[in-house]
Image 1 (cartoon, rainbow, N blue to C red):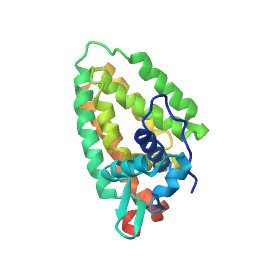
Image 2 (cartoon, helix red, strand yellow):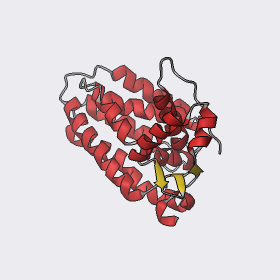
Image 3 (cartoon, helix red, strand yellow):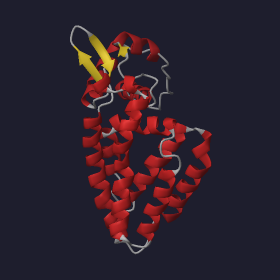
Image 4 (cartoon, helix red, strand yellow):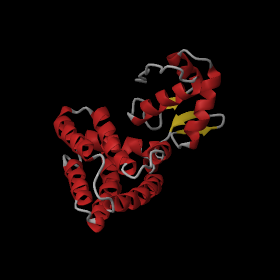
Length: 230
């Protein structure tokens, strides 16, 4: 088990600290799909009592990140393509609506920030800094909502789509899309600037849902991570 312990934030409650550590290690595959874990293990890693661990495990189970099998044990959940498709539908539906509304604006408040993100993505793509690339990708998509003053929606999406991050990270590791995602970000921005609702919505939908097509490639490359192979 290659568990990375994150620094605790100021005034962070123990339960939230456990969840943040667990989510990070599950997303970045330090805890691999199918791996057995226990409250005692995590308690030792984080130097905490079992109570916040138990509470955090309940949340992680609700977010589909762990499976609890009575009298057998607790396991990191396998990747499930059907579940991933549902979560992508949820995310895509909200972002498509948002990008259309952004196209109705006279100008983009965060135009320079969008551009800076894309330039950073280009610089970092070949560095294999997956953590930073995921952060930049999240920031780009969050800005679409922030252009509309919808500052709570990004956290709602994030809280409900942790499950998808492992797929996105595997795709970066496998270099399936190479730099396609950066080109798509550039096109999304271009269409928002030009107020081209149809193409902005079309390419955003494609950009998000192409992960569905990639899932089969990832399943072939990492069969031991997927539910239907275990």
